Length: 490
Image 1 (cartoon, rainbow, N blue to C red):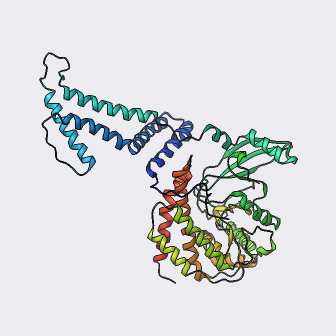
Image 2 (cartoon, one colour):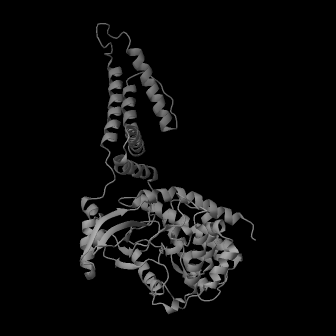
Image 3 (cartoon, helix red, strand yellow):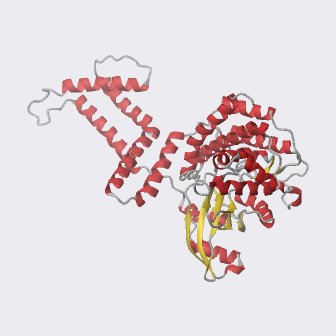
């Protein structure tokens, strides 16, 4: 796996247009996703008002300075013919306030009694010119707000990216000769996806249900690398009987649906943890914790040399410590090329990690990289599947254990979890390195947030989840890194 983005998307050299880009993504999601789903008149009215306010803010951010300067130039020209003497404020905003106040005062004085016979009573040239200039300025702002285009892909690109039931059915029938009787009834995209898109496929094959899941790369997502990179590992683990996604198709041809994608069989059940439900102690969380201990023990017991894995994933000459250093190097390169601003916390964290890499304890093993109850699906009290292998790599099994402990401590005594883990072939847990892997796991999420920010601001069609990840995860997990670095060593 790799964390490096495609070379066709070089790192930005200028300031990222964060506010304007952020507001335009929000406007697009509001108008194109939320509004069509609203049913009540109050909700639709509120959405309309929000849309207008967002448009105002976008124009202020993008055209505001230029529009203001045009207005100031006109007002300055008007003042040049008067006897007004103005100070020279340093701030452009304060200068505009002073100029406008002077124009207003003059207009107010000249608008009274200039022509008593006139219905308007305002025939003074300066006053009329000032009013007209202000009117033009306001109308131009309203016009720009009204005509502001949404962020749009080209029609050709939109057609390529669209995954319809008809297009997917035709693709699968051509790709899989045994699926000539396949009928795809629906394809719907799941909310979320900070680095990959997930689409659920409802289909029938010869009259029987054929549910599947399509995961597709996104442009400049939080985690680079492709879903097809995961396929060799998942196929090897599935052959060993581990509960991992079963690969049906691994398609690297981007002309099919715009990006590389995989299709796997959809497993029954639901995830043991979600941000909506959280951990529920009375709903089988202990079973989920035990199941995770078992599957991690089985995963970490596998000698990678026994699997037919590509050299890009498994280097038989690398030690466990070598693999950890490689991860640190990849994260740092990604951070330096994608971060919008330097961070003393991140600089210190990379230096601290390099100085404290745990010594190798045997040969490197397969590390899931995101092994928690949020990626564990359970069905009827038993494990169904362990999801999301995009962060899998060779390294130290303690990385997975330290990472999942946040969930386990809420559902099962840690000692009991380790006993189950050891019974299924797990490696010795060394608690003295828990802090190291805690810093590493939190640091990588900060890196992913930076890459999400890069994608939001430089992608031709940024997605809302990457926007959220940029702002939220950066702050939350950078704070966690800082807290762990400042903590006293055990």
